[in-house]
Amino acid sequence: MNYEELSKKTVNDLREMAQEHEDIVGASGKTKEELIDIFCEKLGIEKPHTVVVGLDKGKVKAEIRALKKERDQALEAKDGTKLKRTRQKIHRLRHKLRRSLKVTT
Image 1 (spheres, one colour):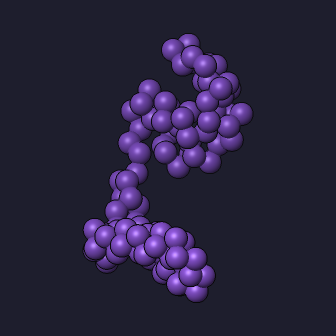
Image 2 (tube, helix red, strand yellow; image 1 turned 135 degrees about the horizontal axis):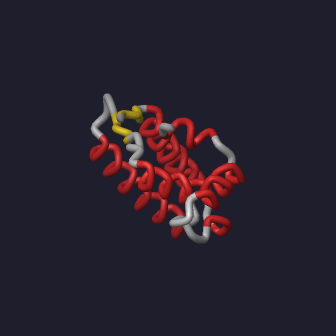
């Protein structure tokens, strides 16, 4: 079994699998992500990692932090147009970061 097969299973299926393993306790109160993490540890499955490709992640995040400060200033000044523009810029930058993520194993 690999990570993709685990992530395709439903929460109920994962909980049933957890009942079969005696060392997994409290599966009924856990979320799907928590159950997948537990099974990855127990079965020795390596989780895939995401890496930003084609962008300078630190530079983009610094720009987002600067825009957040501008956004807060626009909120205090009650400047609706500047507020809207900074929120749109933040949204575009976050979207750009998410698009550039690549999954590696």
